[in-house]
Structure formats: structure tokens, C-alpha cells
Length: 408
Image 1 (tube, rainbow, N blue to C red):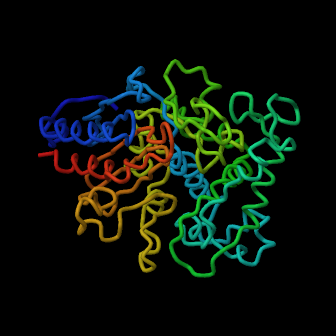
Image 2 (image 1 turned 135 degrees about the vertical axis):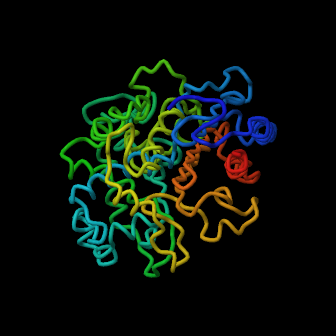
Image 3 (image 1 turned 90 degrees about the horizontal axis):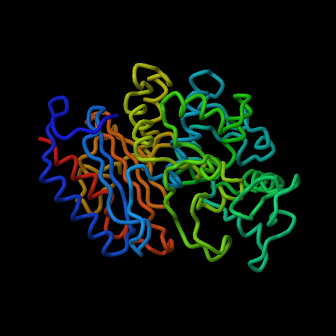
């Protein structure tokens, strides 16, 4: 996508209004330590109309945010890594949303509470699965590495790298999968956000495609789309781009986390996961979200069928007060009637719009009705995840709304 200033296919951006409002909202965010820096990219009708950077990587104001910076996308990974692969597998008839997930993930056949759960229920967070398991507790004892899982030097028995001088045994992934398989399921069928199956999706995708999960994503989506920075473990890839730091970790890595995934569960899987672990630039994210907004098409090439994309971005269980699509987040069910401070995302975002947020301070959203792609990237977890003003100040929703009001 190209950067432009004003007219785009009949829509004119009120630059004075937009720049003033965005600057005000982000400056306040930096001042109140919601994040040390951020960047914002907005595309209208397939063209970039706004891409600006603000602040620095850390509060010492040494390294300014740049448009080429690579970010840890956290849970935005869910819709940008496993989800396109799952959609492709649905297209190919290798997955059925309404068959039991145990049809494909065979360990679940042993568990009566999971045996009949469908992929549709799982992806819509309607299956009653546990929200999260902190697997780090299983790798440490009194703050020290359990030697059967973690070592400070790489070897055949500890091949997976979690961080500089932290290496993981493949046995730990087996433990993660066992705990996911054995985890409890609530009998009540209602909305309960869970990221657990995203820890096993990579192995499922590899099983069904016959390729390593990360390689499948590169060859099927990222490389053909020109999304050269999207991928896992960017430290291996020798980018000239700067990778934005996340948290000063006092529990596990005992240092500033930079270049390696922040999420501990993804880290202990060697950085390659479905719940987190993907890194990328704002421009590459915008390309992938544009693909979704175009219902599976990008630059004249079809990657996913329109039928499948339409199904995934649709609210699945509104009768259960569940706003979610399949993997995708959606606006609150009464969002257009809410004041800005209660809305999610912008109140003027259409019901057809969809996206996801990430723990590190990331947020992506696409709106087919208004042809608007919105990408916000920050490292709000620096220096600590206790910094929650990104949420308290409702910054992402306020910024999103600016662009609905900024076109004339």
C-alpha cells in the first residue's frame, strides 16, 4: 500500500482535525506512561492515508519510534498466524467447523468433556475452555530453572531457544499439550475467552499440511503477500529493522525482553506458537488485514475463499451475548449505541468490522463496510505490564473513532 495525503476514491481526510486529535491523544498517553512510544497506520479504500510515529522505544528517549520498527504482536498473532492457515484448511475441506475438534486432534477423544466440542465453538470462545494456564510455573521451582525442561546452553536435548542463553527441551511442549488436553471445561455454553487451543493449533496445522507451521505460513501467505517481516523469532532473521523492546522481566529472563517473544507460554515453546510469538511491522500487518477486508483477495490474487472469510468474520453466537467471530474479535453487540468511553472498538465501526488486540499494546481492525484498516502498535508493557493506562485512558478506541469522524 502507498502513502497518500488527502483524496482517496471520493473520501477526503480532514488532515487538520485528524493530526490534531491523534497528536493530542497519543501525547497524553506518553505523558501518562500508557506507552513510551507508538505508531499508527490507517488505510482507506486500500491506500495508506495516515502513517505516523510518536515517542521513543523507552522512557529514556534515546531511540525514536520508526515506521520500519518490528513489534511483538502478542495476541494479534491469533488472527495473523494460525487463523489464516485454519481458514485455508476449511477452504480445502481438511477441516470442518462443525465436526468435533477431536476428529482432528485425537487426544481429545479420551476426554468426555472435550470429545464433542466443535472447532466453531472453540474459535468463537463458546466451548467453556479454561482461559489460560501459566506454564512458566511448571518450568521453574523457587525461581530457578527445572533442569529437565530448561538449560543455559543449547544441546540435542535442549534445541529450542526461548531467549539468549535459555534453551528448552521438546518435552516441555509435550507437557503443555497434555495440560491443555486435560484442562477443565465448563458445562455452561457461554462466552469465555480462551487461548488454550491456540497452543496446539500449530501442531494441528503441521499435521494437516505436511509442513512445519511457520514454514507453511511463510510460503502460503507472508512471502506471496510481500509481508517480509511477519514471522516468529526475528532474532534469527538478521533484519536491519529495529525490534521494539517489551518488558523488563524480573521472573524468568531477568533482563529487558527484546527480539524474543514476551509471552511466556509462547517463549517456552521456542517462540513459535499460535497464541503469541508473531512479530512484524505496521505495513505488513496492514497488508494482511487488507486481505481479510477484501474477503480473501489481495493485489488480484485470491488466497482464501470469500465464503470462508465471510463465515469467520461473522458473529457466531449472538443469542448467547457472545460478540465473537471465529478467532476474530468483533464490536460489542450494542456498540453503536454506547458512548466513546464504553465502546469497543470505535462506536462508528460497522457491525461487519473485525480485528484483535494484543497484550503488549497492539491493536488491528478492519471494516469492510467503510473500507478502513486501522493498525495501532505500542509497547505498553515497558517497563512493566502493570502499566495499564492504555486501557484506562481508552486510547485505542479514541484513536479509532478519530478516523471515522475525520473523513468528509
